[in-house]
Length: 197
Image 1 (cartoon, rainbow, N blue to C red):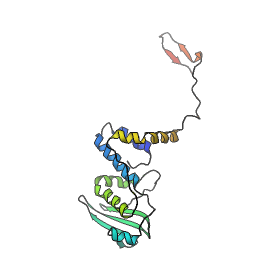
Image 2 (image 1 turned 90 degrees about the vertical axis):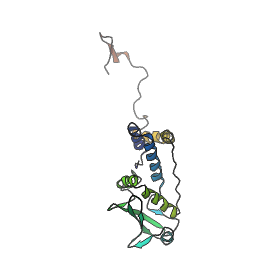
Image 3 (image 1 turned 60 degrees about the horizontal axis):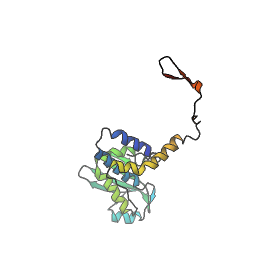
Image 4 (image 1 turned 120 degrees about the vertical axis):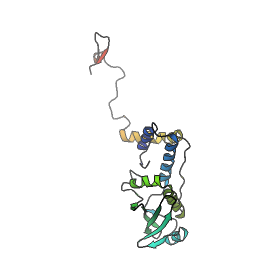
């Protein structure tokens, strides 16, 4: 769900479809779309922190700007690191843990892998970050799917292209001859054919 690789996401969906109900997989696919469409930090906001603090009820604490939330599942705090209209990262404090929103390897993951379980357990966390993106004046328009087939069709070509990039298109490999020489096969007494090459 968190991997930037469509091949990994598609493979995971295929494997999970044997044991997980389709409705749960569609939900996971839609959450992946939402996470994928969130702006990546560091980012320039359409407003500065003084304006954002008034719009989104942020409080200046030390070097960051923070806001506490009392969700139905848990209390959590969002801390924004940045100055002017530039946000370096988002920090989440929840269940006694403090985690950066952005992953260590942004080319592999959309968000910090440690946050994925918390996003799934506490739906208010993702809703809050999406609300924050709107307050920052940034676009957010993920696609949503009603069936797993819709999701697979949407990404079929992109997944195929990613597979070709990973494994090559076969142009470098020697091509199979269209007609094999007869000495590659020999008949044996049982009537079967053995491969000798």
